[in-house]
Image 1 (tube, rainbow, N blue to C red):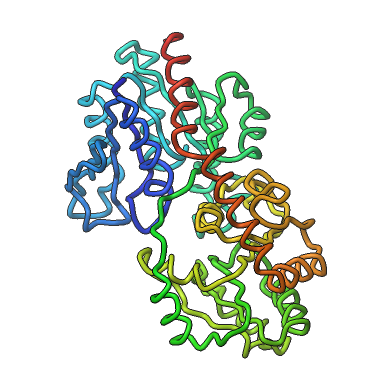
Image 2: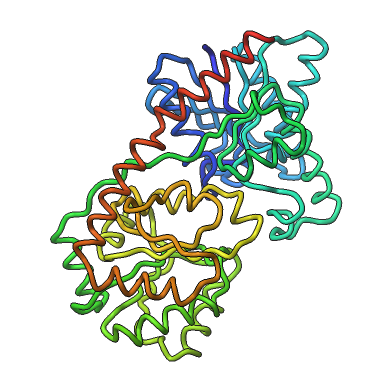
Length: 399
């Protein structure tokens, strides 16, 4: 098959294209398909016009107009021309909003006019509408309404739908998408390198982590209430004074400042080592410093519907995770494979589970190893590519 993926934005700085669309494209290419990824790099303008081949996948970063105010009309025209030029067997749009959503609507119109035959697949990896990202982003009112309308249109009018989470699957069904044409396609693992022990030991010394146990918080901070997590960590430090919390990440809007204020307020500031946001190549050595990773999540619609790539990174690194049972957490973590899951908002249980794993490194390592193997076995990209391929063939036979 000739498969065209349509991205909503550039490969950087956001993650949907690089950590979801591209791994799926590479795996489909390895299965013998011709895959092209069309990228409108309005948020990564330095990549405009670049055409590369990544593990058999042709990635086309479309040219951008000199005036960003002309992005919308010119990018849409260029996206559509590039999609038509690829003569696809199927068009798969990633995110039902903005450019990929507009391309999907244009392609559906051409399908209705019988000017193209290739069926349309819509992918959703987040909830955008009410209770979703529309309420976190600073969009004007008209744009929020439009994105919410695009989302509902894309999930119900496409020939097939792929979703990253079980919650998105049920939302698609509730909107009227036929269950037989919706595929649950969660994010798979990324092949991160293993950090060298000497590098890990050196970094531990530089950061002053000492000889005590280390817990990792790898986060963008918006998934949880900082004050609530500060109370959890204060309990852990009270039980294990030598414990350290290694923080890797930055908030989307400066939430790390709120987090540090909350940690200081509970008297646990001295136990926290914050390295901020790191380039990808620096992540494995920092993950290897920790004995357990922490994954607090408030029970919100955004958290229920998302498919956290950072959680798959932690599991793929062999780290056991203490997490709250919100959304995809219960898909990725199983009993005795991956870590310990507690009820949302149960702070004593979260703190107790964290302390228990920090005090039992052998059990923690066993849970981490089992979690990594389960992630590869049940969520690997070859499995996800096979599910996508079956959907393409199913809707292709109906086209």
